[in-house]
Length: 286
Ligand SMILES: Nc1ncnc2c1ncn2[C@@H]1O[C@H](COP(=O)(O)OP(=O)(O)OP(=O)(O)O)[C@@H](O)[C@H]1O
Ligand SMILES: [Mg+2]
Image (cartoon, rainbow, N blue to C red; front, top):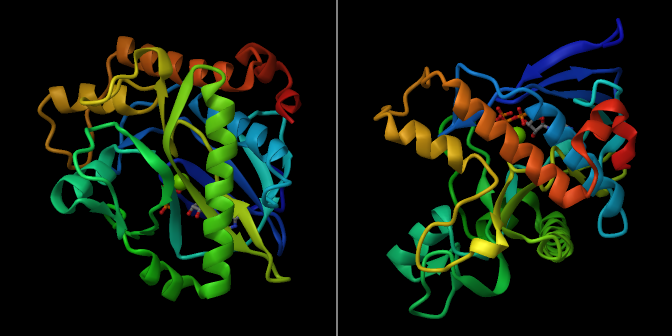
C-alpha cells in the first residue's frame, strides 16, 4: 500500500483504502464468512482467487457495462478502482432455484414477485433468468425485495440500467461457464454511480463468494447441488452443530485444503489459466 492510502472501512472479506478523492484500493483478504459470520480460520489465497476472477470478468464485460477496475496490483489481491456512490441494493440474478429463491418459491410460488410455473423442483432451471434484488442489510441477512421496492430505492432510470446490466452479465457469464462444465445457478452484483451519473459495475463479480457455481456433470434437479463455492464449508460448519453465532468454529486442515482446492478449481476452469500463472503475474487475467 502506498503511504498516502487511508483505511476507510473493513468489510467481512475486504479492507478498503482511499487513494485520494476518487480512487479506492480494495484488498481481498483470505477471510471466509458463512451465514454472515467471519470464521476464525482463513483459506490461503482465497482473496487472490476472488480478485483474479473478478478482474478476468471485468476485462471481458466492458461492452455490457462499464466497471470500476483501474488496475490490479502485483500482490494479486489488491484492486485499484474508481470510487462510486453505491446503489442501495444487491442485484441478484437467478437462473436456477436455490437458496432463498427456492425457499420463497416453496412458500409462495413466486420469487421476488416473479410468478413461476407450478411444480418446479429444488435446483430446477428457470424458464428465463430472473432479477431478484435484495436490500443491503447493514446487519444480519440481506432481505429479498420486489422490483417496485428496488426501483423506489434507486430511482427508475438507475434501477432499469442496473437490472438490464445484471441480466446481460448473467447471460454472458452463464454461457461462458456452461461451455466449461460449470452451471452459474445465481449471482449477485453491486453497482454504483460515477460523478457523471453513469451506472458502473463495482465490488467483486462472478466469484465463488458472490455466486453459486455447480459442476454441470453432476447436476440433478430435485435436490441441493454440490458446488464450487462456500457450500462445502457451510455443510461442514452445520454438521458440527454450531449455533451460527460469532465466533464461528475453527476449520480443520483438511477442510481448509478442500475449500482452497474448490476456489482454485473454479478459477482455473472459468479462466482456463493455471492459478500458478496468476500468482506469478496477476496481469494474465486481463
Ligand atoms: N467502487 C466502489 N466504490 C465504493 N464502494 C465499493 C466499490 N466497490 C465495492 N464497494 C464496497 O466495498 C465493500 C467491499 O467489502 P466486502 O466485500 O468485504 O464487504 P461485505 O462483507 O460484502 O459487505 P459489508 O461492507 O456490508 O461488510 C462493500 O461494502 C462494497 O459495497
Ligand atoms: Mg462483499
